[in-house]
Image (cartoon, rainbow, N blue to C red; front, side, top):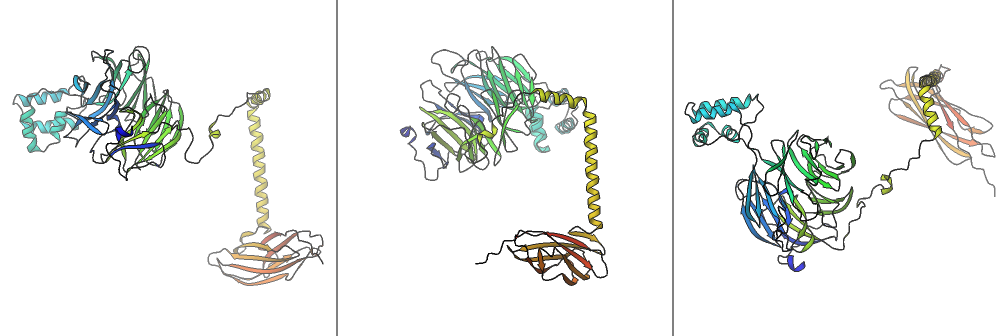
Length: 594
């Protein structure tokens, strides 16, 4: 592999992932590719064991739209395309030898089939119904019974008041987007052409026909802008099944066998996921993941969906939520590892912060850091090397990395978090007879039990209210509002004994009123404590300023017993205290005489 991809040296500025799992095989910053993950495929085109990289290059959008084939580090062939490709996929249409796959390219309203990279078949999607009023207007213009200016005005009015629910043709939309001067020449050129309304392909995938082994014949599935889903015959390229979708599909995946039983899942623009079964032309199941889908892949029997709200979620086809993972940035694209490789259960997620994260189930197992946002991803066999990751960035850079053969990604988080045992389901014991009898008792006596509970609750609230009113009336709270002001007392005791330093902080909580002629009065058990000051005069309390007053306390008990010291805030001439604080003194250390 080193000789195969070593023709172009990798520069020092090649993006690295900080891990030793990948080998930087090729880096081309001037590849000038413009594509998405749906237009990137790795396939053995000539059945010689040398896998090629197919990329549908959008070019500038109007020019240089091509189907490019890369072999190793070189561009092998280029095939011009008439319109921008929507999706590319490879499939087998027969079992003849040599057993080479066909390449399907969805472009506009056509699906081009290539065999050995040569044009093989072109399938046109069925034409749609044309608005009858629009047809009549173009017919009058063709018969010279209506001048182009009047045609332009009539079509504008028809677009604004389209009550039939039938969309207008592309020709009419192009005409209405032109100025009036350019519209005159446009009408004279195209009024003689037949009026058609065509749809375009929005998503493309394959479905095995009668066998699920590698290289088996597969059917082609296409979703269109007209909310239709088609299943095509792989040999005659006729429509086998036609299904309708409630909204426009943007992503599609399928599993099963077309001749036996299959499941088709589509993500639509209405932020819903729809599931179809064999024999159903309408969705059998649908669910809303919570945001617009940025990518849809099938991992085993489950669906992994990248959402626009920076979340990667997993659902069953019936819509049961299994897990979700938050992401640090918006999702650019989502892709799956090659089913034939050892990483079959991994999902690749490209983020707007230029990271490519690889998840195995819900666990982040690897992170690749690129120089720019990766918009195209595909993983599989390239050349004769297994486990090759091909990436295309937003600036058109082509990056190829090889996964080391000794690497096995384990299902554990790289970022520290809760242990794996936390997500393990608990073994809930079976319901016992006691639980059943309690349940029956609650059903039979539910009313009386509720009334008894409410009675006890009201009694508790009443007792609490009475205690609160009593504390306010007797000024037993450390903070009180009333009596001509609002005050707050807090205390701090320092020391281990038998000598303590008691600091009392007093604060006037009123906004403008100044308190004057106050005093602090201490009350204690004289057999346990001795205080230096029994009364501390407070001449003035300015609002929003905390005043601290100190008092020395000596414990007289040899055993170090503790008690409560009460502090009252009084105003002169009022025997009822304004505020009361109870200070719980700590246990005093004994005095040791040596």
